[in-house]
Length: 215
View 1 (cartoon, rainbow, N blue to C red):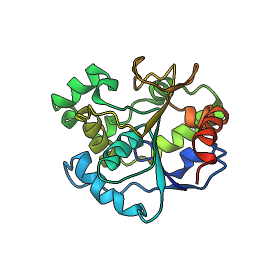
View 2 (tube, rainbow, N blue to C red; view 1 turned 60 degrees about the vertical axis):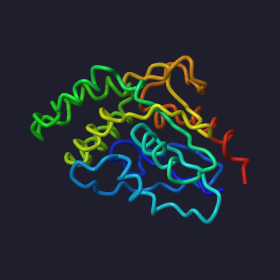
View 3 (cartoon, rainbow, N blue to C red; view 1 turned 45 degrees about the vertical axis):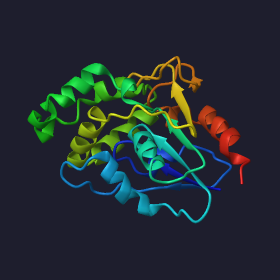
């Protein structure tokens, strides 16, 4: 079975480099959004990268998981697996949603869109120098216009429907996105938002159990 993977907020295939899957993993590339394009419309354009002529599943990291949910509404994946992501708008911090709906993102100049790195590393829960270096490079390479569009999309995302084919994997110490205790999920203890890299061994084991033996 084909397994497509979507990274977080503009992140390329580097974010999957620490995983050790026993199945074929095909990273998908972010495309440039149109001005003020809703995530639902973006998902339709993004979906042409997926071959629907054979069974497939989708793995989405962070913002990529939200996109996976929108893709699930127009495609028919066997599974969608959310890693360090949100399944509905209730997982997004209320203060963040208020900030977005108030239009305050439009007031932030480009040079302030990326917070100081000490803030970023705390939010992502990254302590190891090696992963701090990788995170720093990823943040530096993130396009500011894409970042602004994506943050608006996250704060205004109104999904409330939980897909029946969805599986969640979340870190218990994730400081960016929540995971309801009432929702079934694989919880990696003391893992933060960057667990796709710095807790990759445990994450790979879960993914291989979920997908690796399927045809």
